[in-house]
Amino acid sequence: MANMGAENKTKPESASVTDFIKKQPEKYHEDCFKLLDFFKEVTGEEPVMWGGSIVGFGQYHYKYKTGREGDMLLAGFSPRKTSLTIYVLAGFGNEKIMSRLGTYKTGKSCLYVKKLSDIDLNVLKELTLFSINGINEIYPK
Image 1: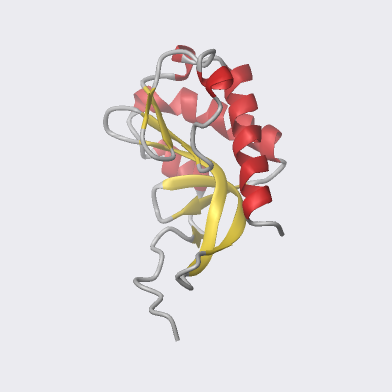
Image 2: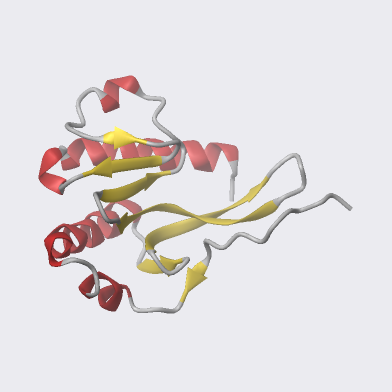
């Protein structure tokens, strides 16, 4: 049997998304509620808390060649100390989309924005759909 490694700590929980947002610094409240509506519309999914600090929408099942497998959110966000983190799990391989997005920083699969007004939400929608389509190609349902 393959060594599966540590269990994934990022998994769905039953905590209230609204309560989580209300506990965040007030500077994030308006943007978080906008992101709730945005991701509900783009994904067609209801928000669910993941790992206690991420608001996720939809999910997919992954299985790596190593044998490790689990479930992960399709898209989501989390208010962090210095920025809003938006999860774009397929990464940022589409330069045509990224060049039009606005002011941001990226990690491996995280988009960091100070405030939503720094980016174009229509372009974020394109990026989110690009990511979801990429995930669905790699890990079909």
